[in-house]
Image: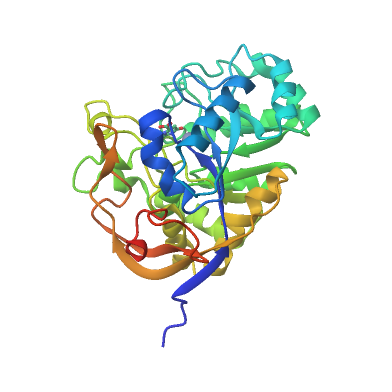
Length: 365
Ligand code: DOR
Ligand code: ZN
């Protein structure tokens, strides 16, 4: 007899860390997220980056216009922090209401981060203002020193930047984004109030061996890079433990096949086609499927002081084969699990979505 459920119904979730790009690329990927998530926190690392409230509102409008007809989805925005960000921009962002904070990219840490912050002390005035008015700092937590081992950059960032930052600004609310290591889990669990973290499906389900399984695997390359099995187990344990400090943020980051399968391939894993379903696999493996809902639909909203979503989404245990690739402008997009199976699939509950609004699994084809 099997005791594992074959259907779970959860409150509509939020993706609190998402890259949707712009233009044609955005139109290719947005339907996947909007079919599953009621809201997503949209990352601002466009070229040029989204550094002002005005740019964020224009970007938000383009996202809304790109939504498939009849689909309701609320893009939550964050601004790209630079050495030159004016503290008054924090006030403008706060006044808007739909802008939740600023994203800190250490300059050079990852894709489109060259306009990021070169030294955290340069943005002290902005951070002080954010702390005062209650804007959240989302952090890409890796040092950029090329001499630091790539697998150690997150741990080093905790010691040299994040820990001191949390002390210097004791009321600043901080989300440590896409954590990958035991060190990060330990930091978050022991940290002061007002500190939380997002976890991606890839870091929950894969370790760094996946980068080299049978050969070099560019579609498993993202930043921060996948870590050891012990690190992955620490992440899974943290989520299974149910702490409200951890919530869902896919970091789904599409890049066309041509720039991924290259001599110097881009960092980023596309997971929006099956993200919620992949998290379900992780929670199921940990024997804690009942904790998926709080992670996906409650902890993030609660941390950001947003109402929890109404409406529901249903997951059924019915494996489906992920296509080898999806259309992506003039290129193709190779999704996580390309050509392989995902154990769960999502269906709309109640079945109110327009046809085609649930791209991916077979239940909606
Ligand atoms: O792998 C990544 N891709 N990590 C990031 O931090 C940025 C993202 C992207 O925008 O492609
Ligand atoms: Zn990201």
